[in-house]
Length: 268
Image (cartoon, rainbow, N blue to C red; front, side, top):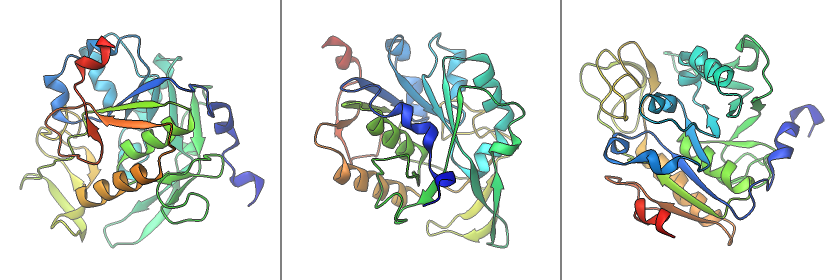
């Protein structure tokens, strides 16, 4: 492997939180039924438009991710502003992504080149599909070799949490349940769940904690819950023995991980 293809910038994150606990915030609407003020002072991972939660809470994510080729460019200005306004938050982005087009073909587009200014708290990485020799079967334990291209960004956050040395990982907001009504514009190839691959919203978003998350005009990919769950299951099988992952959310259809009560975590 050429040295230029290694994620050398990720080396400083290996085991920096050894034996600590992390909260990984997916962005399902169930978050609105939870008191997230408990997360003040905790290490919280977030993704995509998860920064919309800041309207309700004073805490900020410690680590933030966006890996979806459609979402990253749709939210690029917001992501850059997040890093600019919150220097203590580390923003992780892929160096480039494969952009899917309506004809079913894809082209490589650089994310790194479209960030208007290089900031110390923006870290770029190379990402490879599951099965690639650099990342393996779903959970790469040496991210210098490569980050796994996920079927949900939550999987990426778990992978980073393992690499960083966390021994307790709590998922919240991983509802793993979506509705796509007739108001959503669809294009591209038909997917296995009966929805075309490329989506544009025209109404408020019912699938996330904030109606503007994928609100009118926002671009996103059709979710594939079967592939998401399969990736979660692969991760569970590959977790190091010292790492435990719990689903601490509510109204979640994700059964890959043992459930626990969110508020009871803070009684320990």
